[in-house]
Image 1 (cartoon, helix red, strand yellow):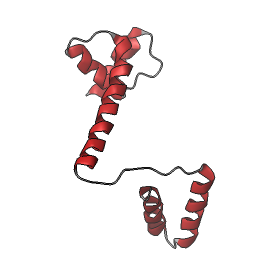
Image 2 (cartoon, helix red, strand yellow):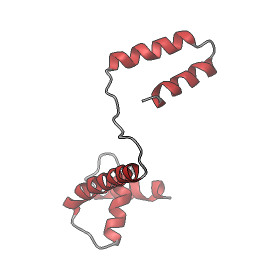
Image 3 (tube, one colour):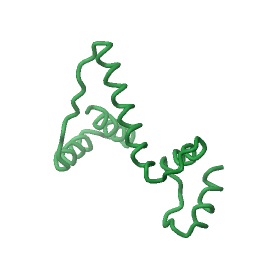
Image 4 (cartoon, one colour):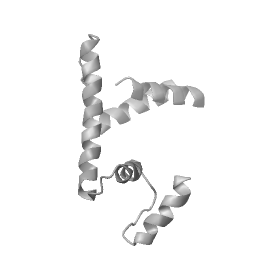
Length: 107
């Protein structure tokens, strides 16, 4: 329903180029509902909420004794090489898709 109603409302303001709602549109509606009408704070609150979510995850990892998560950094060239390697190994379309998915879940 949001995708039917919100774009027309946003278009009516005359300030919006792309009227399709994203996560900020949904959170903005909630912030207005709860009385926060200072639009300048929306991006900050969104960022703070994301940071709190990450921090919570890290705290649970520490509490449960899980190791630190340190994602690796790779270059685009490395990713392309890995994809080509997996494509060469795969024999059929279904296997290619499975290999591609495994490649990106291994990080």
